[in-house]
Length: 157
Image (cartoon, rainbow, N blue to C red):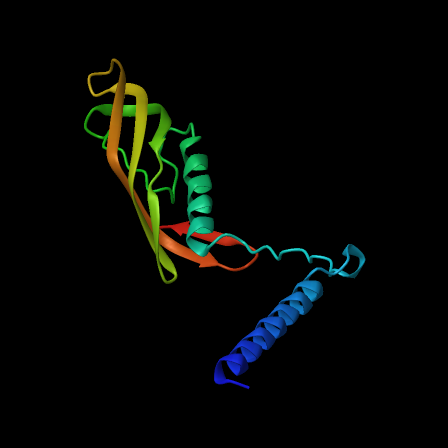
């Protein structure tokens, strides 16, 4: 037998073996539907802490803006410089144009970049009825945050 014939027979045998291996692998990967494992439900996790804290802050500040009292609500980060124009205030209406964006820092937070508009009505220093609108272009709040798997608590300073 010549060397060339030996190589031809060896090469042919290698091709046959490779083909057989591929056929076996292909047959093993196509199990009938009754034998395929059933998919399991994907576990869901709660949103990341910063997203959950932002949602809670948004809810707190939105509730603060619903106040109709004659003084700004406490622990909402709202201050209005109405003291020089009004002798008495009878009501304040708030409008949130943009909520502040929260940044976590351990167990505290800062949130800035919000826009808050407050319309104050009452009696002016001269005794006549008065209405003024104040706009805060960079409404910012700070406070403490407690995050657990069950809840998020925001405490604005």
